[in-house]
Image (cartoon, rainbow, N blue to C red):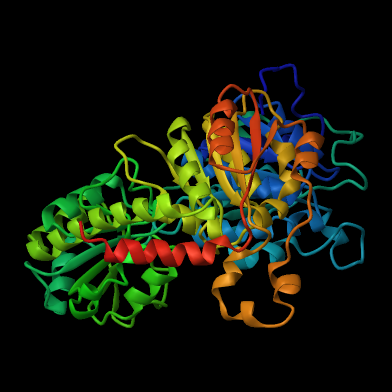
Length: 585
């Protein structure tokens, strides 16, 4: 990653370079400070202008799919928009997986898709396609810019469009990706000299364009909260629940206020970020507790759901079985609710809305809260008791990684079984530890690349928990970790393929292991060596603990392969859940 400080760069060597300089000025004005460059001939002018701007920090990644996920990870860590710059043609198509995740998780990515000359479109010209159509389903806004020309007023008009488009990336409640499509004239490379070019017009003709004010959707005023609750006939003394999933946008302080004023238990996913530090009334054992007989006969009377859907399918089933009102902090762009027919949009939850909710709902049912507190404590003891009796396998491995996470600044939980296992084992603590996960579409692709972006942007030591199948899906992203100052650890739980499918019906059918579970045959030690990363293979808990400890002394990212019996998890989870639900003391 570089931040250029060389101002000997000649900005306006041709009209394309001038245009790039003006566009970069808009990026900086919009608050962008990090850019991932995916180089190519068509993007050369833009990439060089970005690289030489001392206000921007750049990371170069030749694979656009990896670059897109790296930018996504940077935006997750930094909390502000990040740009990714590509060349034309199929390069833009390779951004789609990251755009899908950014769209679903409301992450502000800015796609700078450099394009062939406008006259090439529809002619069969090389490396030319409809770049707006590629991204259109997944972006909040897009602008197809004109080629740079001599008309200063037209360029100013285009810059105003750029400013308006960039604002859409961070509009409150509708954050997400946007696209600037930038065609450049020039047959081979837009950096070629242009005979007769005399430089830019006088400065006043290209005055800076200010960012417009974001006129986001009208948020539900606090008085509407009282009206909604009155309409639903709910008030004080209820058996209420707060359910917090991944991608939580409500501030921790708002959840704390709501939990304190209502006394509602907070069923917080690991990836909600509410476990470290732990909010009031936090419950981390809901995945198992929803099976408790008490909940079959004692129903909640109100559920407040924050963030994305919870990770656990058992919690999904529990929520879907309830007929009480469920309030959701969703934006105006979300229609319907897959988990409830009694769902109502709450708007964005901030401290003002949280206090209004707390005033209207008052203290909830004290016995209900007490049951959850005691049941959670018993479940924790039951889990520990069952773990001690288990042989070495996936559950003990994940538990060891979660306990060792104290030595890291943040943790990323990969999709499939990693995030589900950690949801059961990542305990609440007083220390601050961000927890990241790509739960927009729950895909396993791009995980290592996202982690790389988090490490680079956060300048912190991170821990990635990932399965062997998800790791193999993104092995080439290991190259993005070879940068000075990037430190952390990747724990690959090798359970012989897609163990998550052992829990669904297809595992009973002929050909399941070969066609669905598909044990990978990648040599992770060889992969680590190829990318110059430290590597350890662990066969038990002692070796794993030592490898995690030793990784702290490495000035790099350590790859740890944790070998577990392929079929261990299904039986382990049954025993863990049973012990958690039945624990009496």
